[in-house]
Length: 261
Image 1 (cartoon, rainbow, N blue to C red):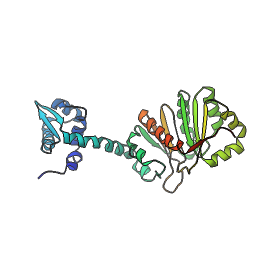
Image 2: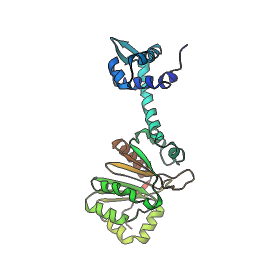
Image 3: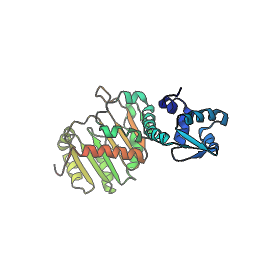
Image 4: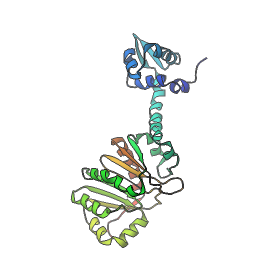
């Protein structure tokens, strides 16, 4: 009796690793043994199951995906990428309010690779960003979308602008009102700088903030109670930066440029 293809692809780690190894082309058995870190006697029964279910074919001790195998692996990869991201901290993801992420972007959550969930003690809540602020200085552009003010934000922004770094700043209406009232002089100076680009979001921000540069991104999402629980997600690499840039662009579509105070 044939197994369900779902079981064939996922129930055995060896079979799953073989399918993923073959996604970029045919490979000899010796190569598959090395990639899956196993021996021929252990792998051959799994290869037979894959062949019986028309997912791979072999010739001259070389294996490759069939058309059916390619169809299945094409969907396996993004699913496994999503699982890898969530597996970083399933409790974190299970308790996040993710409504601020557009559905098409949520489908690409697997792009958030090389991430870690950080839960610093309250006394270290902002010192954890020191390395991030250092990387700001070697980036050509910095993006911040926020409902809150970072300590010493004015000196950080001023230093970036002095270094000719383009600074893109989207704030909530409440935060814009606060800036106009309490930081009128600083904000006026920033707006008059060609490297400062400010916008106000016209909808409710259902997150605390997120920021990214050329190197990595930092996201602070509320939990399902709508509260900030001091947890951050820090991601590195171009894939994560590209994903966060898409999130930024979706927010920008519902934002209005702030050209004067």
